[in-house]
Length: 301
Ligand SMILES: Nc1nc2c(c(=O)[nH]1)N[C@H]1C(S)=C(S)[C@@H](COP(=O)(O)O)O[C@H]1N2
Ligand SMILES: [Mo]
Image (cartoon, rainbow, N blue to C red; front, side):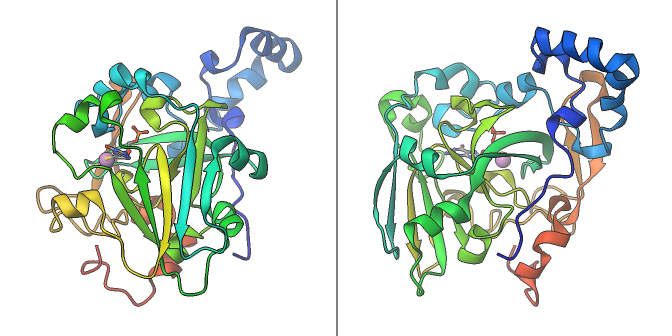
């Protein structure tokens, strides 16, 4: 890719959430900047890029391996063992192998990305992720010239995952991207939120984040990445191919068979939770529309 994504804002610019700062920083902020500066973050929140709170992001989750209720993952995922952790990278790569999580982290550049996050169920949040570009990891593995797709798998460990007793989906949870989507600079491997290690319920120790696609493409707790020349099977598509396409790009003009995707409910703020029009490619049209030039997005939904 010719460019690296630059954030317009960091969470320090946009977070009015005092709980995120520790007390010393807060006092220093008040002493050093004065009240006018302390008031600035809310004003700088630039409409829809104001991050949700830590509490919101980590207590309302979809992670069916731990149950299908929104509160189930936060309640059940603490038993997940994430140390040691390794990711098998295989298929059409020059350097296949089992990569220890720590070894990956020692080679990757972690940065902050504040992204909109839009679930196919029509709710949304804004999350200040920490992570590295998937492209950097794939380049480390050495993608071979015939590879066209990337397949991902979540850990499948029934003893720690009560939700897998029910066959609501094909386990292990599987997802996939076209290679050019995977190499796009917006495509992130997230390892943190608000500068802290990513909590189990959000997909510890590393999960995919593809901000222009519906949330289910952003597969959690990844243990395997396979480069292949065929479109890989994916769990939601296997469950219902009429409702969940391989691409699943956020698109307000293509309805889910059972509901409209024109609007979304932005979580947070209690009484101030609001409905917003859903943006084409979740607001990342400028960056990603080129990937789909000439494609019928209603057919390849
Ligand atoms: N392994 C796995 N990954 C998953 C899911 C899941 O059930 N299992 N749910 C997906 C869905 S539907 C969404 S909306 C997001 C939710 O991410 P969050 O809980 O961090 O907000 O994770 C996605 N990744
Ligand atoms: Mo979702």
